Length: 305
Image (cartoon, rainbow, N blue to C red):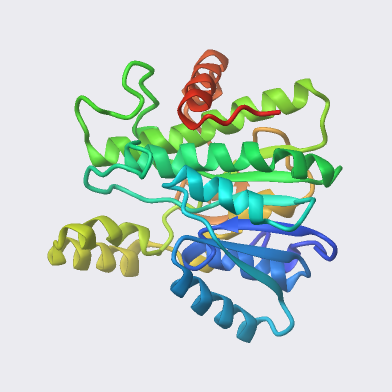
């Protein structure tokens, strides 16, 4: 691969980063490379056992890394609030909203939301709002990076049925949750620009990267043949998690990134060095983003300061 790489990440000494889903996949690589460049990284993980294993591996790979493991379950708003309350840092320079689920059978979060919409969008919406004062306190250079997907092209959020209560289709639900990530970034960018603040809100996507996301739904249903098929496609077609993390790292650290940018692999939403990515027209719709914002505030109880 030619172009921007992890070696181009600028010095992160003195900066604090929070990375959700940092125990595996592109979240792990994102956290590790930020730590390698000197950032203090909070590994926000749902599973404490897996989080501890990831923390130890990261320490082995980056001796002296400044890491702190914290429990965060985005499918439980009480966990989101507890995470923020217990976070000792009074400033956060970088929030990477990375964790997510993909194409699951119909499930509900602790708070009763459809699992993909609740985890991928509502959990991160609440987390970002609760951390926003600390992001503002970091001053110029603070960023919120929300990881979406090229599969947002499968559809946008239906304002009449935001959680697909009437006809659930797992891949459409996933695509809509990823459109929600982009609509959230668009509206947050608009609001931050209007207030003249220094926090930057951008989105990224990894292309087709080999992670455990592709196999989780099949494993949950006990469909071994589907799981093996996903693993085979990962080996044949996907780029590595190392490469898949580059758009997130670029969005988080590179110079020249602008409000509401969408960063992804430069080659057809699939692979390659990070660059500005194409996105569906509906993800820049002011009316749709404002409507989703109002719904998200009502459902989560989080009103942005």
